[in-house]
Image (tube, rainbow, N blue to C red; front, side, top):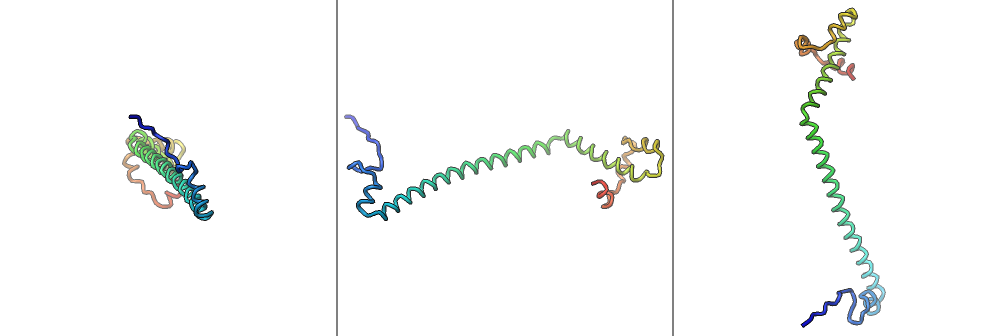
Length: 135
């Protein structure tokens, strides 16, 4: 035996839409309520779909940001370079401030940062005044 599959729609056996039947049988108020309900349901469904899309997009962006931050923090070579640049910058400013009375040759010789200067470098006190001068 064959089964006939009919498309299911919002129509009755008389082939009239439910909206028309409700309006003619119960009056325009019920038709308006039905129409308003369908519009609100459509907007609600659209809102849920949009919210899911936005939530997934924000989650992906946050994960990407955290991943980039983790990669940046784990990059030891870049960290070493930035730390070296910072220490050299502090050393140059420190030498300029503490050797105002020295000659230019002494300043040039003292401003190079080598392993022999580690003792003096480790004894630098960064006071609030010196820090504000660094800025």
